[in-house]
Length: 98
Image 1 (cartoon, rainbow, N blue to C red):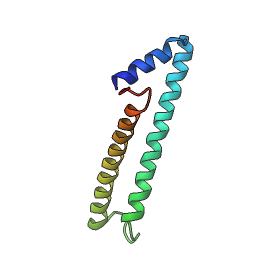
Image 2: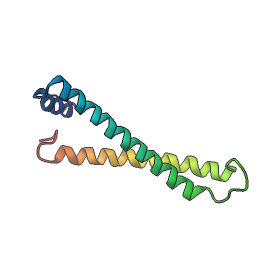
Image 3: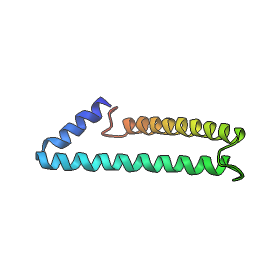
């Protein structure tokens, strides 16, 4: 993580203040899109797996427990995948571990 900050600072060093600002806005937009995509995937997957009927306005106990369990699993799996990608990135040439 620290090396990534140094790499980012080195990359930004040659840019004007305006270019740096544009780059940071673009990066924030990319991160926001990724978060929205992840959230939508979570909602779609858990809804499809857990909600079986539309007889009432609210989830029944079984559906509610299923959605909560699905959400926790999805978040844990996403965190593990992120850690795995970070580990692989550190092992690549030019990564933090190089």
